[in-house]
Image (cartoon, rainbow over all chains, first blue to last red; front, side):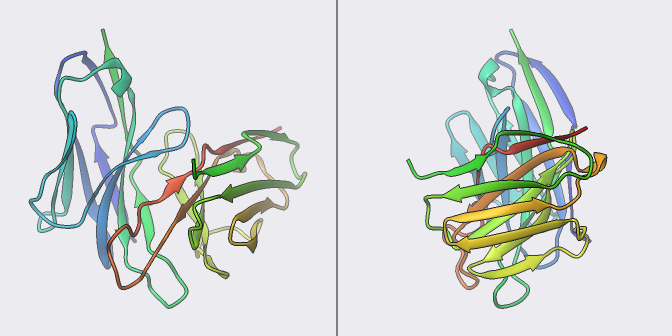
Length: 116
Length: 118
């Protein structure tokens, strides 16, 4: 069974701190690893990673994938209160048959709270 | 802006009373998904449509059905909701090409429909 495990489950930090969120996965026919941010609304896309060792950056957020060890990390530097959210990691698997799509298996998320 | 719209945002129903949740998209994506997300749990895939092809997950209860009358719309029907079906239901879309990676798998989510069962 496909599985994605995130750690820590929750985290409280002070504004300005740097945080690292972890994601490990076991997925058959792995295709890519995605990170989403979920506030009290739809999850919004952050990164998609397909190759090992290549860091993706967007402002204060960055992420990297290790396909040998089957994990990814999401770093947030100089955290702000607006970063408070649940961060979801998802592993995509290749379609099984014609007429089916790639599917995402999600982790339970890391709840990040940034305090003043 | 192109987007995924879910209605209603909040739905309260009685035990056993059928419910229909809707999802529409202006992205012209060929794949539409329904996920169930319970409190503090990972979103769980119920089923997806690849164009008109319906793909049910093996562990999705028969109580959950779906319809996709055209590219833009998809419905989730819960025939006899139980207390355990109370959850957030997320619709998502993607453009998926089995042989290519560019842009694939990036799901765009709607805001969700939160279902309460009394």
